[in-house]
Image (cartoon, rainbow, N blue to C red; front, side, top):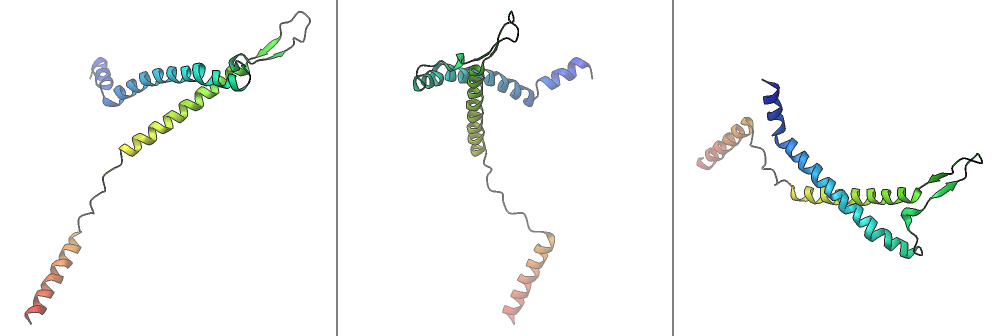
Length: 134
């Protein structure tokens, strides 16, 4: 089988296509969550905390040398990104939970009786018939 034929067979399989669609939707969903956090949640947190822009929070560590530049630790952006992550994980958890509810399998039929059970049932029925005749 040639390389191109093998690649084509691989690329059009259902799993690869499903994964590609998932990555595209996931990227778009990530943008939605980022917008939710940046444009709705963080301004509300800013109102509660006295109009503080959480993303601009930083800790400045002075330089150790007189002519050195200070070190800036931007923990506000880290907090905002962490909130993005938590909301994203929560949404994925809820979606997986809903999908699992939709996928609930129908109850399985009881297994068919074994050959021994069938034979014993026939013997039982024959004995009942003989007892009724006598």
